[in-house]
Image 1: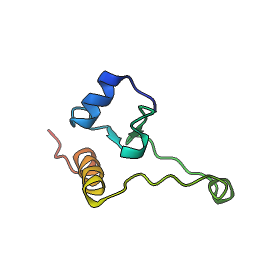
Image 2: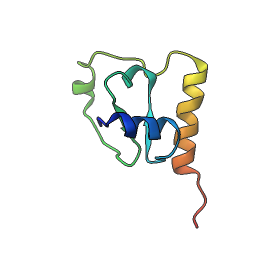
Image 3: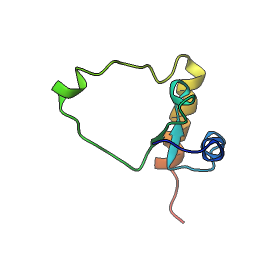
Image 4: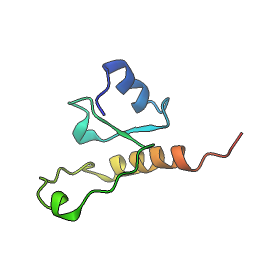
Length: 76
């Protein structure tokens, strides 16, 4: 989903645990909405041009931490 510059900054700082950033999508101010789960037919996905989300290990770890922050938190 597309967000404003301020929202993108908050997502990158970890202040919005329901969203995560991917370096390849930051220029367009796009973030991953971790609350949504969708099914897409394989024949449709096969036609998409692949864009790598992360380019190095540090980016991959940052995305993994964002997922953990969303899914592993203890209930209050």
